[in-house]
Image 1 (cartoon, rainbow, N blue to C red):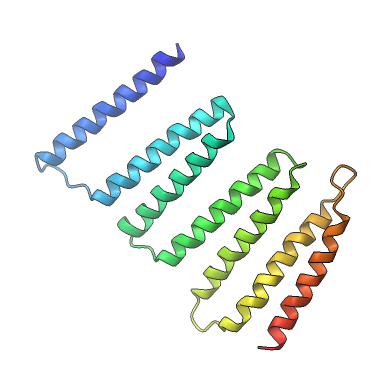
Image 2 (tube, rainbow, N blue to C red):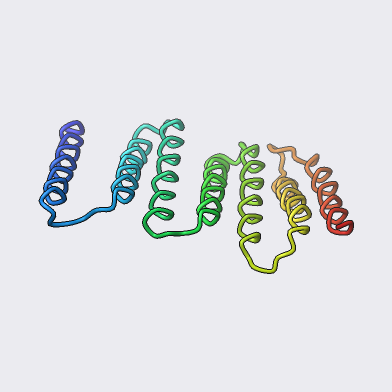
Length: 185
């Protein structure tokens, strides 16, 4: 039954693609090629997200996320003319959200918090750099402060299972680096 349902969706999608192609070829509608490419990436990603919900295999989720990011970037930059740096922020924050999701699904995998925090910090740095009249010299301090916050969070979530008392040391050291970087600029 599941195969029949899936085949029906695939067949319906192919018929829809054929109809759109016919309308474009007959000059009834115009579709931007970038819009078509973005739609294809996002459609395949949607199919893979559904597949992930059924199979619960992490590689499927990773491929779906990558295709979502690519389709979104094409759509935002090519169709809606969004600045490339803003798309980069969304990309970094999307990757950060994936790692955060990995941690939220199983809080014993605290190692996912570190790349989530680093990617979020990098995205924040790019976003702040887009602001006019921002002093670029402060970005180094912001980077160290963001990473210190990540390790500080690890220290806060420590418990009997996750023995993360050690996280206070990198958090304090990196927080000091952020102040030193800001003071000497």
